[in-house]
Length: 151
Image (cartoon, rainbow, N blue to C red; front, side):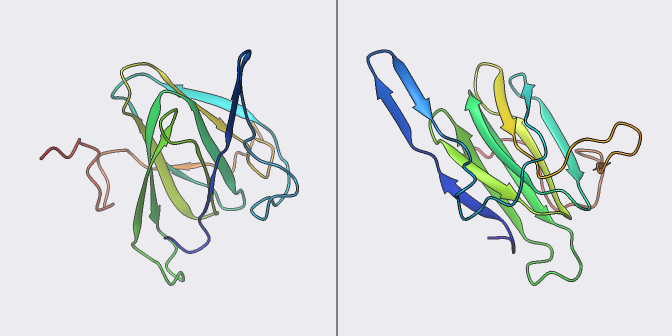
């Protein structure tokens, strides 16, 4: 696991009315602080990535569909520099992943329906000066191929 990355298996509580799933609580060991909450989606087969933050931790959970969330440790001073982590998350595997600053991340919708990610970052988004730095999803030096691995 990339240094600083944490996961939390999410508990789904179903009953005859529907279901409840807690994503992140202020008394969780992985909780740092609250910045904002937002939802982002991807259509089947779409890759959104790569990007990273200099100050912000992300806390992501997939609440609809399935996503392949991929992390790449681009922090030269990290003991896990160059390491890649893949997480297959969503309705079939409810999971929260905490992504530290400096770790590149992106995701690909691997379900047959639009997938939906909820993110609870530690910082608010500053429209004039965002803490978000992007790298092209395919044209880069990251040793990762977004294509499906059959076989």
